[in-house]
Length: 296
Image (cartoon, rainbow, N blue to C red; front, top):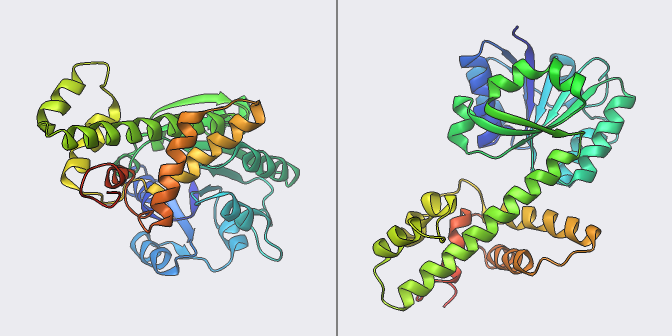
């Protein structure tokens, strides 16, 4: 059954999720909101949606509100800002929060939403922009079972595969681990290829051998060519990699664990951000390891 859906945060992921739900699945995207008013306006015109200037108007316009925001502070701003926020008039609404954020903020929004009479789910994404447009996201869901079941059809429309991880907050923990390991793999690949380059080895040969040995990884498939060619058009930014490795770092601290490899990886992505490379794709970490590049 089609639903009225609104989006808060219409960058490349949010915008393409909206396009898929309306153009391919028959849902009506009734409203959009973004601090980038130009992006919101362009998408609103494309889909025939309202370009809302107030968050409360977004909630009023839809049955389901999907948020794709950048960080915990942005999440607090859209849900808890004085005078105007998504929880105004939220009774009976459903909120699906898809950004990679700390478990704590997801729980905070869940409790406040529940108090307002709304359903709140996590829909953590581990996929790319093309997957968002095609409805092929991999979603990690945090929700009560009954709320998950109620919204399963819409979640299926967004995803090729999904997994209920537990209550709200649990999916954020899982996503932090996914991105921590992905970032570590990316940093390790950049160092391996950088050293191979410094040793004068044929990088095509190295990638082929990596793919057939214990050095193989998903990152080898997605990032090696970009590292070698220095093509770092942004799919997942170094700045976001630093943020997500930081979420894992904070979780480890709470658990009393030391994760030195994650700490080192975060330090590399922090360095990229400080040195003006934070807008590059995460593959840009190779700029810090290959001889003759930024880090040399």
